[in-house]
Length: 385
View 1 (cartoon, one colour):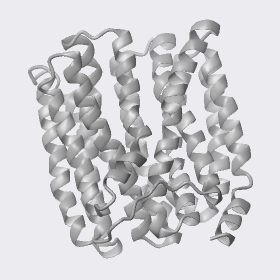
View 2 (cartoon, one colour; view 1 turned 45 degrees about the vertical axis):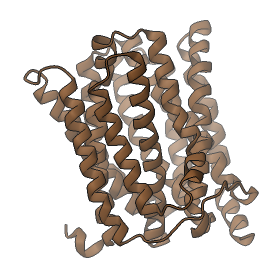
View 3 (tube, rainbow, N blue to C red; view 1 turned 90 degrees about the horizontal axis):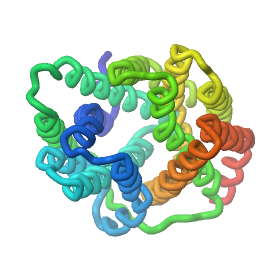
View 4 (cartoon, rainbow, N blue to C red; view 1 turned 120 degrees about the vertical axis):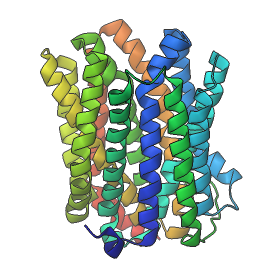
């Protein structure tokens, strides 16, 4: 496939830097839990606080954008990748819980900024009719990098001495992604006037991203835990499931992007939420481990439809407000990053493991019903522009 002849130069640069960053991030992700539990010996309560603190930069994304108000998208893109790489490198020198917290804050700050700036740059760079397809291609590249990063850890585990060398390798690869992203500056020279943008006519995006955050954090917090706790999934099984998901995502993400461009966000999101509701019901009630594992793969594949929320934002928000509005959306998305794990964990403890997933079914059904009138909300927002 001759991508150079078909894609804008900025997208090729974004794909290259995204590949390197996702490789680094998922190499880190593959070994972090073992490092925290086995080398630093942190307990469950400390781990829970660590995961909560990891989400704080997501809540503060709009404030970080405001601090960088005079910085162009290209420079902020490079800075975010560089911060992520530096944060991963810091894990290699972490010898205490305080060190771990500091590395987590640096890495998470960079990673949350990176996601918002990348979507903003892609939405600005491509034709509106092709936005979902291009985001799907970039997500496919990210899935390939994820698969490679996890594969390297799996294949070299018996020869690499300890876990820290992986942090060094991943950090260096992440910084290489920052170097590649420097080429964006030659293509994206625009400056951003960043301010806290909250407008009533953008409410459909805010509501969708809030519900998207609830769905995301139910999966991140409870799906994997349920597979291990209720169905006895081993470390190797979880790694295999993530690898299967990543392998399938290489193929399905571009396809999902094309589907969204073809049928529109309203129909695509309605299909997505109906499938996810069934998946959450499965998490709550299935007894067979193999079926729960299959649901986990399907669940992760359906996250590809999150592209539709970003493309919907691109349709109702003008170019000059897009970066700051996406940052606002990320902040809104992470409101549930704190609430869902706490509330769901308490409900699991009091009433059983089915309850957090039934809560998820309710939230997903609300999102599905809301998406049914998305086209009308889009037209109303465009008329008021």
